[in-house]
Amino acid sequence: MAEFVYPPVIGAALTAFRALDVRVKIVGAEHIPATGGAVLVSNHISYLDFLFAGLGAYRGGKRKTRFMAKDDVFKHRISGPLMRGMKHIPVDRTDGQPAYEAAVRALKAGEVVGVFPEATISRSFMLKKFKTGAARMAADSGAPLLPVVLWGTQQLWTKGRPKTLTKRHVPVTIMIGEPIRLGPDDKPVMVTRKLRAAMSAMLDQAQTEYPGKPAGPDDSWWLPAHLGGTAPTLEVAEAEDEAEAVAKAERRAARG
Image (tube, rainbow, N blue to C red):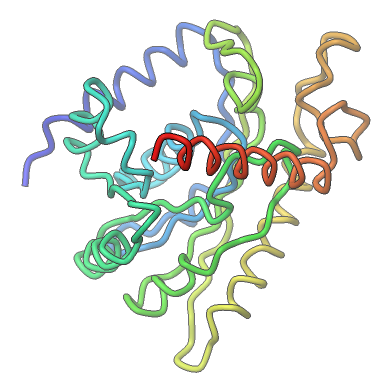
């Protein structure tokens, strides 16, 4: 079936990256399967991660990734038609089963489905706890897990910081790991631990080899605390996430 929305969106993104001289480096493109379903699993540090994770799959094997995303994005007057046109998968956070079933169907049909197992952006820029949905999708569909790590995207637009979409010359690393194939006796919880361990090692490598440096003390916010930056530690970031979730629940309750 012809794709009328995805190609021009990819073209627009690539044009914007060139105009801003976003210095994209893709490592491990050979791991992108040429055909068949795959669960692309990415860390989450920026609102633009779906663009860069999708770019890794596209550059690596001309694969178009169908990302799972909260359904609010599909209700927006601008992003909604684009998301539907690119055949991304809406997720109702009050009932995720229909989205899960849609994702498994897409995987069995040979699609690449994109998942952010942390569910929300990591304020610490380190890996949060992983949900097991990606491993369960792989088990139910027979598709491999494809670990992807992004680094540098947080400098462009992340949670709690102003957009800097016009910032030039930002290096962005897209690291693609070896596919993880599940055996018939593999348990989703154990596979998720293996997946997170692999992505943690990849993230360490991406951070160590990253060519960008803070422009000064006020620009160290995008570096994790253990690398000398001023980003919150994982523990502090988790406490902030919990406080935000409570505040949102209270606002919903107040609206009735």
